[in-house]
Length: 180
Image 1 (tube, helix red, strand yellow):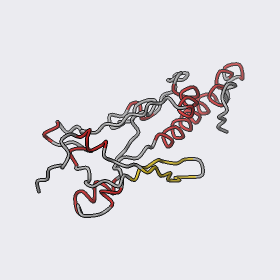
Image 2 (tube, rainbow, N blue to C red; image 1 turned 30 degrees about the vertical axis):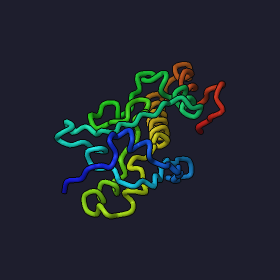
Image 3 (cartoon, rainbow, N blue to C red; image 1 turned 45 degrees about the vertical axis):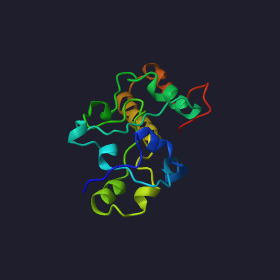
């Protein structure tokens, strides 16, 4: 099926969207952000996933600015001194990781969006839901717990004097954020 857009440019299409932000609770301490967009046309696979005509690169690439105070807390706690004491995140070595460190590109496409694109292009979900979700909070939590776990494994049984620098992974005196 061949389809054209009523918009002359992708920028025009994006400018026409009316976003309504939603918070989705993933756990007691993590949310992901989603936008309902109430658009008059959906995004196609080339725009969100790429095609052979775009060298399999999507036309839309999202990156968080990481300038808000919450991102600043996690940059100070985890990412500004990364890798910390030789401890690296498993995803740092993965060719499949698209998010980066810090996870500024943590905007995965909803699986259901891609499924509807493939099987049910008339589904209202495609015009109501922005295909990407803001998933940085999941990465903040996972990265922090992975580094704490690796630090604990590395320093179990080590003299206290060799562990004092680990306090920065637990507490930043200039931060309002405390992760137990």
